[in-house]
Length: 528
Ligand SMILES: NC(=O)C1=CN([C@@H]2O[C@H](COP(=O)(O)OP(=O)(O)OC[C@H]3O[C@@H](n4cnc5c(N)ncnc54)[C@H](O)[C@@H]3O)[C@@H](O)[C@H]2O)C=CC1
Ligand SMILES: O=C(O)CCC(=O)C(=O)O
Image 1 (cartoon, rainbow, N blue to C red):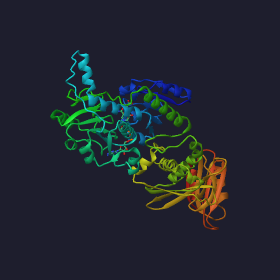
Image 2 (spheres, rainbow, N blue to C red):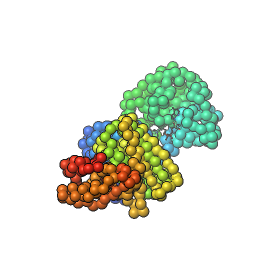
Image 3 (cartoon, rainbow, N blue to C red):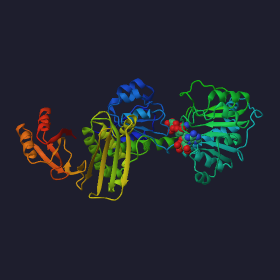
């Protein structure tokens, strides 16, 4: 069945065509994002949800989204998506981190000019027939200092454009390296210095606990008298009430805001104040940017739904379309090794150690580790997948350790999963042969060679004559056909293991009878 995608915001129709061309069924309902009840009602029918900022992907929406595999944000900020809730439900969340950066930077520059020359007020006055030539006295931007708070993709484009305007640019961004600052031609400074020196301040950080109210009343008080402030990033970076006071007192000469604490902003402390210019979150609204992000999100979502390739996911490592087929058999191996260990582990898991030896060490092991942990947790928690597994494991206090060793041993690639509980430590290793099928090759240090099969029996016993005959007769008498039989032992007369593929399910009373056979220590049914 072809995957189905719902577009619930006003994306460029270019996205619809991409989905169709890629063989994906698509429903374009651009107003649905505003109707959360209707969205909750129908989301269960879709594998993908493509959004801008109007759709709120809440835990309630996700709870109804049984089929949903991916949310694609045609844009940058994913603050309208509950990422932990999506991750916990195994839904990939991806954005398009660059498609609208230039457009948004241009909006910030436009806002800066609009502030410097009071263009909106002058326009309104002129069109009202007032011709107030003496009312509007602007400021020149050349040689003024622009303070950029957050010098990432958009902040650095703004800095570049401002340098082109012959402004001096100072930047506050704890993650901006001195080399990058030098490359950009900006002066990296601490926040207080930026506040003291800037004639215009522009914000370009995400909204986080650290950046909320970065321009607080206290910070605004440290700015130069007559400063102008531009916010085209996120509402909440500036304390709106404090800014309103500073505008009224004349300390701040102007503020141009595209984003607000509450959106849609129909009321706001800044509205109507002198020197305030507002736009309704238009930063990304150009034909070019909207085509870019719509095309990109549709391609990314299609690649994931059809080929398992992941790019720009905020809750999972990237996997390219070239890597996906190479990873696939190892993802299956890791998941099955995890499942094997999970089905045998009855007590609380403390640590999961995964070692990648040989060629597999060069692959995207994060995805493999997530698969192994998903397989491990699934016997206990049905509702876990490769996306949600690491966060669920963390919540349960399970420590995940990964080791890579490029030197191969007996196998070109070997994956070893070790589970540590309070009572024991158990390792299981597997590989993928040239046929692409995963195999289990070592259990607790005992060599075996078995493929994973839908129904298996795992038996540990003392290595004594008679076990295999008695075991086979017991299953035969119960009408159970043995499909494959793999044996291993640590030494003659020592510990032995049997991994047996059976046609059909083994009833519980037969497991009990196997358990009672002489020399058997443990008998456990396994399903893969
Ligand atoms: N108005 C609009 O329509 C649009 C708004 N945006 C928003 O613009 C903002 C910036 O986007 P990008 O440049 O693409 O993001 P980015 O991730 O490339 O850059 C953000 C920068 O903020 C810096 N940063 C993080 N914490 C900081 C802190 N505590 N203090 C100072 N700097 C800090 C980071 O180091 C990074 O360099 C985001 O909030 C995004 O959602 C993006 C597109 C359109
Ligand atoms: O889609 C939009 O119009 C908003 C863009 C935005 O805020 C973002 O990409 O972070």
